[in-house]
Length: 138
Length: 138
DNA sequence: TTAATTGCAAAAGCTTTGCAAACCT
DNA sequence: AGGTTTGCAAAGCTTTTGCAATTAA
Image 1 (cartoon, protein in one colour):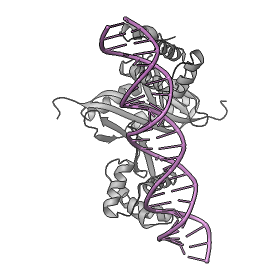
Image 2: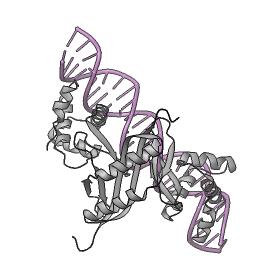
Image 3: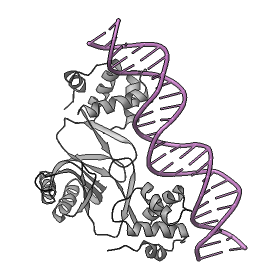
Image 4: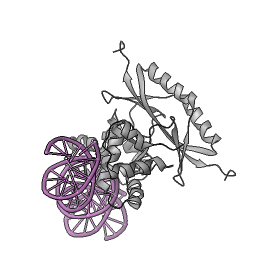
């Protein structure tokens, strides 16, 4: 269940500085979808010699290397998650901000079909459900 | 097919300045999904006494009044469209940036079902398909 | 050794805001 | 008349970048 981003970086031949190792570890351990500030905070606790600029440069590098996926939930801050996990979409609790991952093959299939009907081949998609917890289920 | 945002504003009791009228008209006429800069440009051609700050304030006001819907395609710029049109999602051509609207009831139904299964009631959703034009169809 | 990476601070890009002047109703 | 809205310029926020110093390979 735990990604090994450090190893992925080495496999891709990235030069591994101490900063990159720390950031990679922080991201491997993350079970949520941290934004850059949060990654910086967590990394700083491990090694205080890491700058915010380096975090920005590193997550961009990891994203361009296909190691991370950038998410955008419309709050103006980019969030990141490990690319290697099985594909899923996100449900965002509009009251608490909690993020739940889900997967639905039928929706995926319909998306490809919609694209094809419009004369397109699906490259990527983004599906976010903004929802409110049902009463009587809390 | 043409929204009448000016009338909607009046119905909601918004004070109608000349600037707001011009911006409302620009948005009513738009057949695409302009960002704030584009709205400002189009409005300036009609009345050069409109400032960018006013456009920002106005689209926010219209959004809060339920007249406009804010879109975010991940390019760092907010885009707007008339809220009153029937619900639809967006397919973005990854090569040209062209935006195609589509609607699929079955996907909508499955979204509500997914949310309910997770113990949630769907409030809103965002579905974007990023796709590439199929060869032989151009 | 040497090209790549870092930290710092400055800057870029989108958006918001303080304030005096101008404006609807 | 009186509260609202506007324009301007300045500031806020996230993200990027120039450059000298540092570091991995």
